[in-house]
Length: 225
Image (cartoon, rainbow, N blue to C red; front, side, top):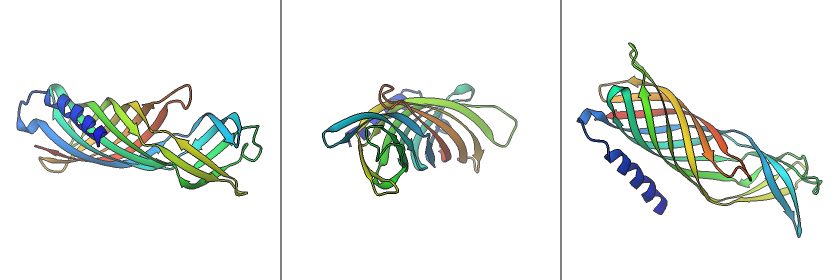
C-alpha cells in the first residue's frame, strides 16, 4: 500500500499545481488494453547443485493486459497534462537457455509449467498534444515519464523430456518512459472514446538483463467536466 500512496500523491501534486481556468478543462479517464512485451535475450547464471555456469536465456512473453486511471487538464493551444496510475500483467510463456556446461538445458525449448506471472504498477506524468484538424475526431501525440514497481517472480518451465528449470526474479523499481498516439472520438459533449497505441520503455539494468520494451493497443473512455 505504501507504493500506491507515493504514486497517487506525486501525481496529484503535479496535477494540482496547474491553475484551474474553468470546469470544462478537467477530465478523468479509464483505460484497458493489450500489453505485448518484446522477446529478450540476456545473460543468466545457471545453477545445479554446487555448480554454477554463465549462459544466456532467450525469453518470449505471452500477451498480457493493461489497466489505467487518468486525471487530466486541458492546457491552452491544444496541450494536455495528465497523471496516470497503471497496472499491467503478463507471463513469460517460453524460454530457451544457452549454457554449454549443462547439456540437458543447452538449446532446449522450455514451456511454462507454473508461475512467471509479472505484476507491474506504474505512475507517470504525460504531456499530450491534440492536433487541430477540421474533422469530427481529433488525433493526438505525446509522451510521459514516471516510475514502475515490479513484484518478484518465481517460475517453473519444462522441456519435452521433462527437465524442469526453476527461476526467480527479484522485485525491483525502475524508471519508465512512453510515447503515445491516438484519436479522440467524441460521443457526447462530455464523453469520448479514445483508441490509441503506446510504446513503453522500462529502464532496468543494462549490464544484467537490459532494458525492457513493450507495445500497447488500448482504448480509453474519457469524461470531461
